[in-house]
Length: 217
Image 1 (cartoon, rainbow, N blue to C red):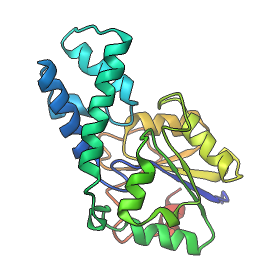
Image 2 (image 1 turned 90 degrees about the vertical axis):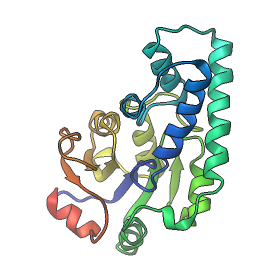
Image 3 (image 1 turned 120 degrees about the vertical axis):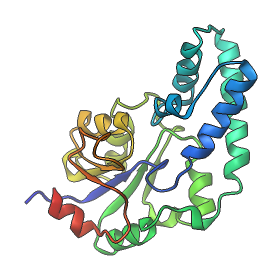
């Protein structure tokens, strides 16, 4: 059996459902720009960087912007998002996540966050779980968006492990692809019908332990 030593977690939709706050912020910006933007459109933004997300929204309306305008609008969206997540509370951690992380740490696994978010530290602090992570690799440390594997490769390096020793937990198609592109197993969190490329799919972490995951892989 393969010896896994490290666990790499995406943030949004895996640890906490901040996706709703991203949607509200992008929706507010799109409304201001007069661009139609739905929850279905928002699915394309999951696991994608801020600038790439804005470009997808502009593409919906075949709109163009200068680099300066794009940067200003990305800043505006982030300011809105941060205003929402500053009010995050511990009960917003997704069911079973804290118990899963605690169990994995007690069993000797190294744990890192691998997220495109530049607000990861703030979110983990608001949720009171920063101490459960050995390393945080986020949008302040990576330059290439998923499905490029940079964030997860850097995560494994930060933990002092080989990529093949790590398991990635992701809720987005781009994140599953990023894990595979980096040579890692990917466990999807969500619906099997969407995360068809994942090595295994779980609906969530409630009642699940790391031993259960290892048995599946």
